Image (cartoon, rainbow, N blue to C red; front, side, top):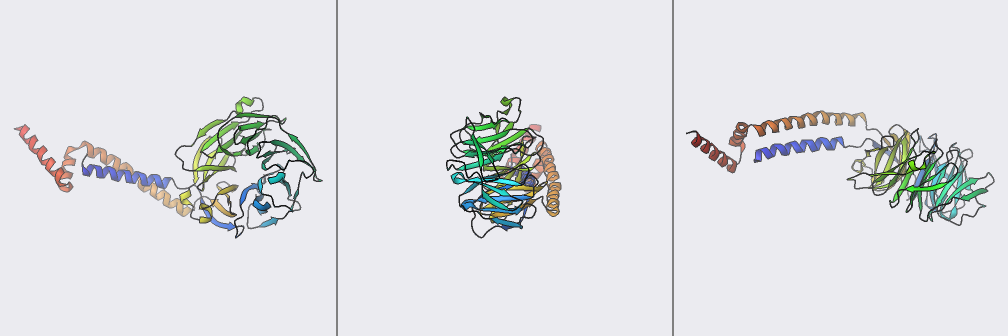
Length: 404
């Protein structure tokens, strides 16, 4: 292929790549951020009530702060007598109270009504275990708590600070990384560091169902009627778990891996309906639609121009509407996400209008050019290099000798 032909194909490739890169922009953009403190708070997560009104952030040194989920500038910092690191939280299905768990067997109870935060389950022996996860069951009658040592308990807290505690049989020996319960189906999903994925049934029976050997980092049972929960592992692995109370074998995880991603999955949260958001490091978000079992780019790392977000780790998100919500980072920075402004959409549309027809035109031109020797010869005579012109002269001389 001559230099001119190669040039045409090079131009085609450039246009095609340009149009692809434009189409790969994030589905949302970030707005102005809010800093909870001038210091690094070491947050571990955020939990939002079922109505989407109240958000609770928690982390190192016993830090707890309550935010208005619609307007996070409205805040109440909560004080209690301890300083143990807090690792997970979950709101009761009724949305009025939340349990927060952490190191040395600490279980805290937050109540909306009087904005109180106090020790719960203080009269039971939790063995000073490191409580890594907590989830209320569907009915809100029991909370399940998991530990770094692999124990799983069901816990019922009483109003006077007491508690009823029972160990679930068949618990594992590795850290319980995450757990969540479905909104309407009386089943919960547990993810452990070594044993894999387990199911807690309505009668509190616990069974390991698969997923052994994956480094699980999060579990989410999104709202909606879909009978599925989803778990993520840090090596770009996603597991779908079907919840069928009549057939536990249906809950064997269906595992897939997203290829060609240079990121690690650090957690997963609900967005809206059957849609979830996977948080990654380096900082980005991937949308995963549970009903479709499909994943899509959501917020690309290259599109984050706020160093407070791009240089930190996302510890949680919550939704305030379709494609809108908030991101929480480890240091204590909050940033709102929303669909791109109309101006950005207009530029994107303009590029699509220009790039796709241009690419199509170049494809047609390259095909016509490749099929026409006269057009190739004409182009070489005018803009070809010396070697191409000499080669063309030899070919024409040879053709003239053949015609004699």
